[in-house]
Amino acid sequence: SVLGDVSLENGYAEALIIYGGRTIKGVGGGVCQVSTTLFRTVFYAGFPVVERYSHAYRVSYYEMNASGSVDTSLAGLDATVYFPLVDFKFQNDTPYWLLMETYVNVSARTLTWKIYSTPDGRSVTWETTGPQNVVPAPEPVFEENPELEANEMKQVDYAAEGADVTVTRTVWRGGQVYFTDEFRTFYQPWAAVCQYGPGSDSPKKLARKYQICGGSP
Image 1 (cartoon, one colour):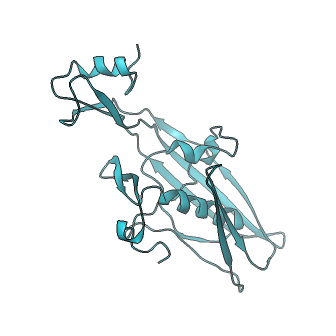
Image 2 (cartoon, one colour):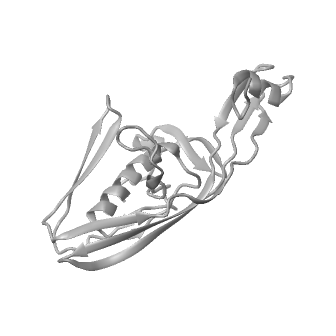
């Protein structure tokens, strides 16, 4: 109801989305950066999460901290949305109104989400298993693309390890446990995909030349 119909007519642009087992260009790509930021804000604020879905695979920038370093403790704290099937919902279980504001810093490439309300004394602690049962990414996939020249190659999808993560959150109020919940995430192993033009040399040879899809000189 907040995002509305994700369409070009409503002002959404095309960017990368996960659809049909592949990462492709689609309308509304990037919206999950908003839903993930909201999920984390709600998570740390201690509100009950009613509906949340993770991405199919581990998206590297969701595991980066404020300094830009990879922090695997952030795995399992993403939330995807895809109108109208996949949504994110949380509950305001307080008797007070919430005021939500967002701030975008284009030059710093940051999004900040703030929730204002009357404090009710709740606080949050949490722990994570971190990525477990890690599964290596599958072998790269090579496919012909008639729009490319012979011996031209480009990478259109990127490898990611599969893993399971369980995040446990405890919400406290008045020095006592108010509620505890778990967020279980099962990330699929994801294959890199490279495309090459008709009449090209061996795809693996091209991958080594371009140093993509697992190819190295």
